[in-house]
Image (tube, rainbow, N blue to C red; front, side, top):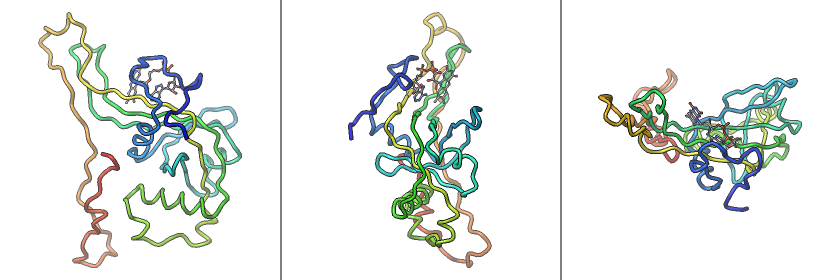
Length: 220
Ligand SMILES: Cc1cc2nc3c(=O)[nH]c(=O)nc-3n(C[C@H](O)[C@H](O)[C@H](O)COP(=O)(O)OP(=O)(O)OC[C@H]3O[C@@H](n4cnc5c(N)ncnc54)[C@H](O)[C@@H]3O)c2cc1C
C-alpha cells in the first residue's frame, strides 16, 4: 500500500493547501485518536450526517450498529460515503475578529461502503471497535453471542481516497493589528478523563481495572 493517499479531484485541498497532507501515517494517527467520526451519506438524494464510532483495521475503516440501523442499511449495498474526523487542539485568539481560528487535525475520507459478511473479518472489526473505546477492553468483557453477531451489521470503507489537514500555531495577525491592546494567542485544549464511576453491580472495594484507570485517548 502506498504511503500516501493518492489525491483525486475531490480530495485535492485548494484552500490553504500547505495545511493539507496525504500522508497515510498522519491520516491514520488522526483517525485512531478521534473517538468518533461524522459519516455523511445520501438517503433518497438528501444529504445526512450522523456521528458514529469508527475503528481502523489496517487500510480499512469499520462501522457497526443494529441490523435495522438506517445509516448502515443505506451504506451496506455499496453506497458512496464521506467520513470526517476532527481533533480540536486549541482555540486561536486573534486581535481581530477576522483571524480567530482553531488549531486542529482533521481527516476526510471518501469511499464506497461494503457490508462485512466474513465472520472472521466481522469479529476483528468488532474487536477493534470495542478496543478503541478502552484499549484491552475486549479481554475484559464478554464476546458477542451468535444472536448478538446476527443482530449487528458491520460495514467497511476502504482507506484509499482521503486527505488530512492540520493547523498549528498562533493567530495570523495583520501587521496593523499587532499594536492593538487586545490579548492574542492560543488556548490549548486536551481531552481529560474524569474519575471512573463503578455502576451499582460492582462489589464495594473492587479496584478499577488498570485499562480504565490509565485510559488516555490513543495518541492523545
Ligand atoms: C475545527 C475546524 C474548524 C474550521 N473552521 C473553519 C471556518 O470557520 N471557516 C473556514 O472557512 N474553514 C474552517 N475550517 C477549514 C475547513 O475544514 C476547510 O478546510 C476550509 O473551509 C476550506 O474549504 P473548501 O471547501 O474551500 O475546501 P477545499 O480545499 O476546496 O477542499 C477540497 C478537498 O480538500 C479536503 N479537505 C478540505 N478541508 C479539509 C479538512 N479540514 N480536513 C481534511 N481534508 C480537507 C477534502 O478532501 C475536500 O474535499 C475548519 C476546520 C476545522 C477542522
